[in-house]
Image 1 (cartoon, rainbow, N blue to C red):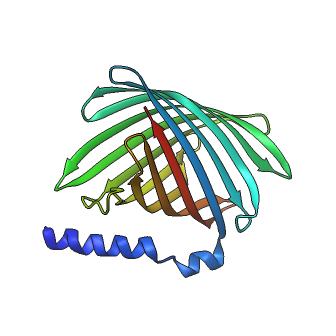
Image 2: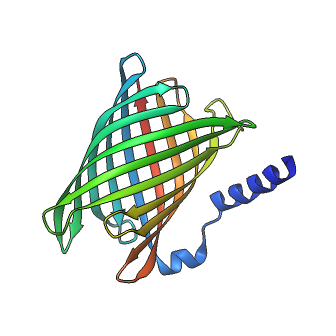
Image 3: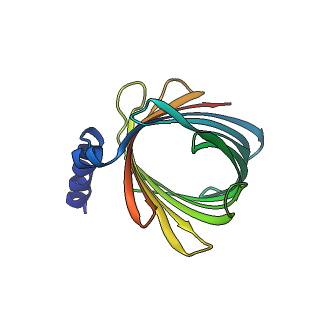
Amino acid sequence: MKKHISRAAIIVLAALFAVNARAYEEGDFQIWHTEDQEINILKKTKYQMEEEFRYGGNAHQLYYHHYDFGAAYEICKNFVLGAYYRQIYELKKKKFQEEYRPHIDGTIKWDMYGFAFEDRNRFEYRLFRYKDDFVQYRNKLTVKFPWKFTQFEIRPYVSDEVFANLNDMYLNRNRFYAGLGYSLNKNLKGEIYYMLQSTKGAGKWTDANVLGFKLKLAF
């Protein structure tokens, strides 16, 4: 068992610091920047806010911006339930189009052999003015490794997220993450990650290579 875990860790760390050259040749390079705020409002209840900017076209053009806010309640040690609303502005045909996206998240958490697991299940109702609405399901599994480095508690992790259109019952996107989480102080945490996003459109899959940065302020 330990042998298999060590081998998997080596593969993950290699993926973290080595970019898939073929994906870069085929896909766009993007930069995503996310800022989170989290406030404890009641026992086991947190109010959460998020703002995110995405730059595409080899990171030269802002093409996406969203605000997300809501609350999460810790039902038990291993399960958190949250309700949120996301307001999205995405560049389509040289114009920013709006999307209205309420969503519900249910996250299962557990530890095993020092690894921390999170399995987030999200149901989204995506409302548009320029195309048909649909319901989307997203499952994101995150594994945080047991090692922490330096006084900033740098900790490697990997994630994989699957997207499914529930109206037409097909998979339309996958995101693989490899990154590092860190803690600047007890209230300010951050992440830096590489993400390979594969999206299905017009009958084919296309890749985007994303360098992401996230800051989280918690009280």
